[in-house]
Length: 100
Image 1 (cartoon, rainbow, N blue to C red):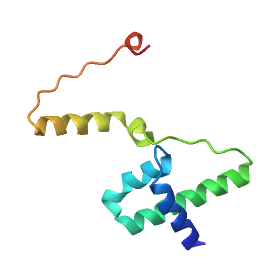
Image 2 (cartoon, rainbow, N blue to C red):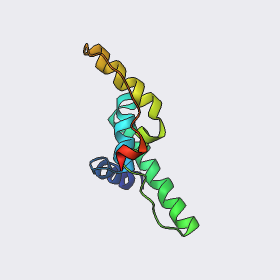
Image 3 (cartoon, helix red, strand yellow):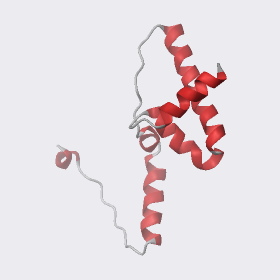
Image 4 (tube, one colour):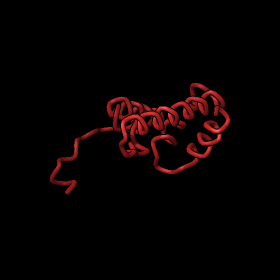
């Protein structure tokens, strides 16, 4: 079962704009390839268990799940990156009227 889950995790890590690919990219820097694949495989197993026990359909969280869940950390990281590249950064929030 572990081999099948790891193979599915390798395939899921190469998909575009999915939660499992985002999880792979989020963990790869800290854990390395093999441990990250096992973690993604474990997530696949937990998703399958949840779907089978609760008799519900799968709701994709999206490839930007980690960015949406921690907006302040993403903002801070990107501002620091621009400052290191010698840019002056001024942030202003876009109003909801301008988005529509």
